[in-house]
Amino acid sequence: MSIPVAVEGSVPLPWRRRVTARSAAGAARLLVRLPPRRLCQVLRFVSRGSRPADAERALAARQAVVTVSLRCAGIAGCLQRSVATALLCRLAGRWPDWCSGFRTRPFGAHAWVEVDGTAIGEPGDMTLFHTVLSVRHQDRDQHLHQGRRQARRQARAGRHEGRQP
Image 1 (tube, rainbow, N blue to C red):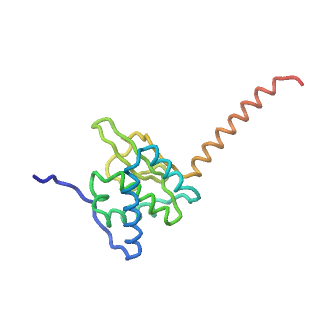
Image 2: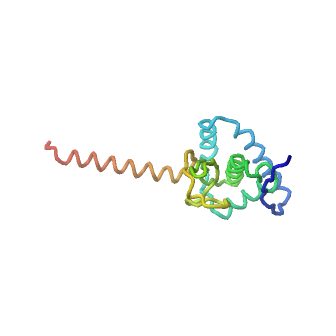
């Protein structure tokens, strides 16, 4: 008995892009075997020193990965596809936000990449998914931490203003 599987379409790729996409897909196949915590650690390490990816480059990376890997093109290949897409972007010095999450009705788990909060190349309504794990670009994380530091400084300054020397 066969099971119908939807596979995404392919795009023509130059041989160099095909080789790098296959390398990214192969590395991703190994990485997705890691426990989730370790996978996030590895992806955080790999993302260091990168610039934020734009939607056009992230979509081109996703299409390249889907073109060279049947596993990544299938429905069940979302984790490997998303990791391979992020790795391929990183080979170009960029990093999209890598996310993994779930939806409740109907229940389903999924992994994807996004740029500026928008899922790249994903069919369907991605707002139904709750992000559980993510490796975001470092600038977004730094901006978040700077905001927290500034709030702590303001809170400390407010406490010290009431004191007399």
